[in-house]
Amino acid sequence: MTKGMKGIAYTPYAKYATIEYRIHWGDEEGDSCDIEFLEGKEWRIVKKTIKECEQGIDQPDCAGYRIQWIERVERWKDQHGEYMDGDEDYETLWEREGEM
Image 1: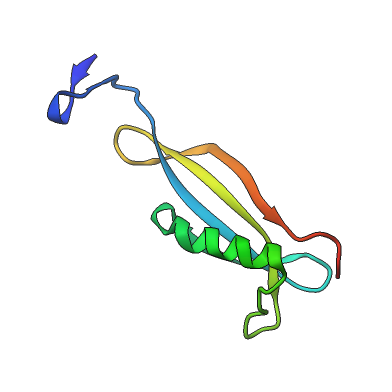
Image 2: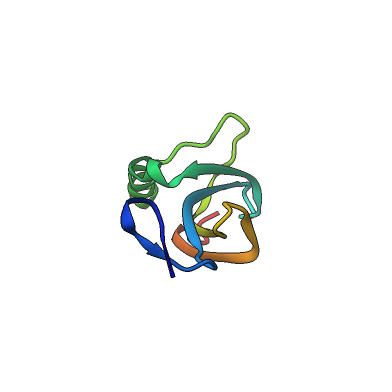
């Protein structure tokens, strides 16, 4: 182990996670047609959007697509800040039931 900034110890092979949210917009069949990416710091917008979706007051976008599902993604970077291939963790936060 070596000392990093402010005396924080890290290993040379340390990994760092970045959080992003993905809002999948889709058609009547529920297929994902467009994905909106939000940074992790925009979690308040995501929380509000999920609440609107749960209440059924979410609105279609200009192309007529509605939100089909929202997921939280942890993407891992190595010590050099490069994304590591295939090292992502997904969590579905909300998904539209088969109402369409």
